[in-house]
Amino acid sequence: MLTYHPSLDAYHCFFRMIYFLSRAENTAFEIDKMRIIDFYLSSPAALKYFKFPMELKNRRKIFSDKVNEYNKIPNQQSLFFEMQHIHKAVFDMLASIGLIDSEMLKKGSVYLLRDHLTNEISQVIENSSSIDQDISELAIKDLAQIPLLGVNGLKDRSGLMDHRYDLV
Image (cartoon, rainbow, N blue to C red):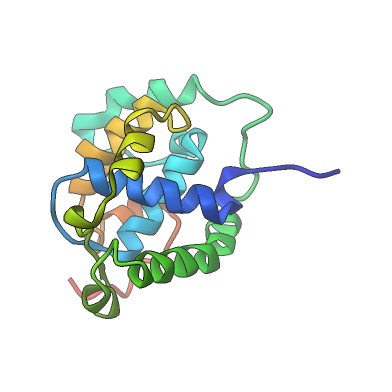
């Protein structure tokens, strides 16, 4: 049986990255933070298992209601691991076409060069309905603000990456 999931679609990943970076504040994000946020943009139902900070606990119900038998992810860590090659390819592609700063990428950060966004790309982003608005808002306003490293960091709260040896 052939199945499709946007998490493993490099073109959709490209779109999700540009979508998030163009709507988030104009700052550099760690590569691992971008990977985690992209995972949730592509698989919002996985937020059911995210350890929300106390001030965001009320948001858990929004994502619990989105889970159905067709969008459950049996093993989040496995899917996230499979996505790493797609993420690397997309970051490299974004840098090669000049949409993100290639020097910052070499140092481990992703920074959108907003003046390089074309009108066509901006229009597609504005007219998009392929990304859930609840998850978009959560990613831009909340997940992006959570530190990546350490206990209660994004790596710890998501359970997608090991955080025990982070230098904090």
